[in-house]
Length: 104
Image (cartoon, rainbow, N blue to C red):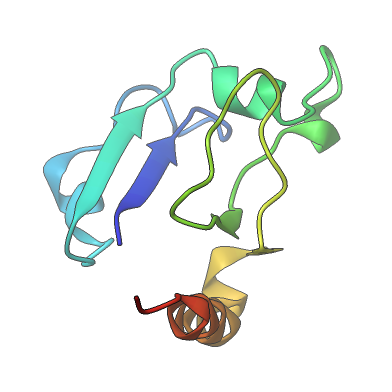
């Protein structure tokens, strides 16, 4: 499993890429973290210009390992928000996905 974390500016305090202490809060092995200063991912996922409520942030999604992103983002097998309130459901979704793997 690989975890991708995308950081983007949303709040007034988000003036730059997260510092090392912030990055360390993720605490998950095999994590790749990225700074998206223009919120390109949020825009690809539905953010509309001038509509702050449409910004996609504080969001988590689980994708099957064979999922490929081509054009529009694919539909996740599970998603939720805000992250702090869905951690138990996230763990369950990951375990469920792991159990669905077909063993040859």
